[in-house]
Image (tube, rainbow, N blue to C red; front, side, top):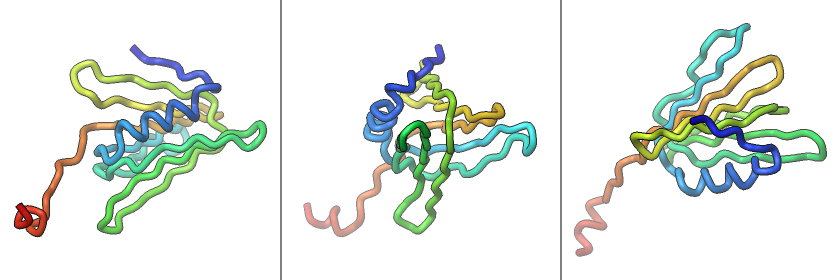
Length: 125
């Protein structure tokens, strides 16, 4: 079931989600009539989603990237609705951020990235 996040909870919702799903693999899509469905990126880990309020205007920043230099920031100005669809069969979910004009950004939170241990840490045992 999709959960509509009240505007008063946007900041704590994204703060909590960013902590619980830090470095999870993602897919980010933008859906808009004028451009169609566009995949912005797929596979980058989530560094965080930040909600900022400057007076009466909101901005949402989606921060993705890894230590190998692949990074992306997607900013949404003046969002109107935030929805979250948790997955029932796994711990991931989908965040839907709606803007004026019915443009939507979908953030698919897919799965944790596998942990890799360097040979230096393995040799330290």
